[in-house]
Length: 147
Image (tube, rainbow, N blue to C red; front, side, top):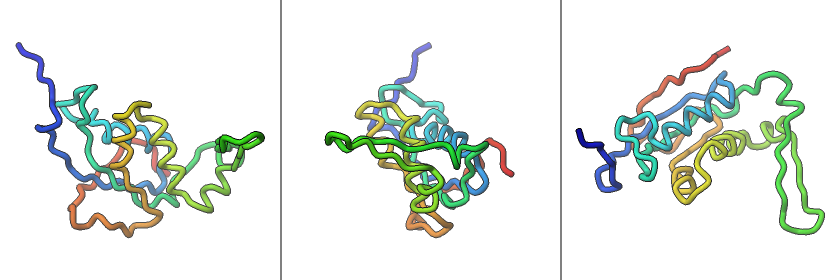
């Protein structure tokens, strides 16, 4: 029996829409990352980009479990001396909740040129309005706890 190896010319990409309302951030991010990498397909090949497009709606309604909303912080460095910046997830969720989901999903993708290519297929919106109606995205019900 021969092993099937996908190549970029044969990959067919679909559009999926995911509702993030009342979903825990980590569960949402891991399942969206699986769709972006193509691990939900039978033709998955690790060195070929076989993933699909994902539209995440209702990012304002995503849930952080426990005390993460008050205690968790996002840190980054500007590159200058003393340039360590830090912001709490409570202020980040109030200011721009799309960045929270993008950062969580990006952290679960490969840290290679393949992962940088895959993150470009993620589209996150604060509410139910999105620009991808013309692509007719399929609704995906993710596994996880909904409160």
